[in-house]
Image (tube, rainbow, N blue to C red; front, side, top):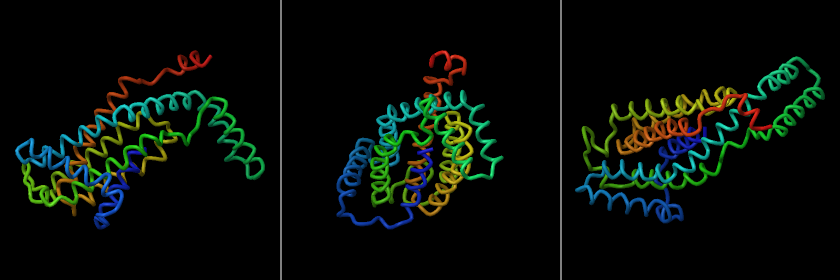
Length: 251
């Protein structure tokens, strides 16, 4: 869920100008990543494509423990929501059936009491990983976008400074697949809420990539592919618990 929001934020930001290069964010996050990209490219005989791939993977590996913790919390909440689903649906039916506002408020309070009784906070989806990774990812993003050396470099079949239709399509497909894989950790309510987000995120990536240097969809494709495998690893480490086991554990 948060991944989709961060992707849209990055996509939206890319349409604006690079901004003030003397600002705090640029000095603290963008400039260090610019130096790291150039240094890594030197190690690979000037290949900025390999540098982007390696740094993207390193960043994702560093953030992986936080993301897996978030995955674990999502699985736990999903298990709890599955257990109380019959009670939730009963209350929701009563809310839809009544037109009395006081009765609706009473039923909504009953729903909140049900959440509280089972230690469920629907709004608690793990914001800390999001807050930590956003400045890191955005710093790397703008370092890629603002480098003239990257813009003039060729890698594989494309030029990093020009848009590429094949890479654009790959980036969109990868992020759509990543969303589909991540749905396994969501409750049914979250899946309904995020259905549109699952389409908006790859569409935004494609729209931006069509008018952006190929270095950006390369970054998105590598990062999205890593996140697919990360989700699969999370599913393996924290498989869904059968409801009866969860109930027994709670007792």
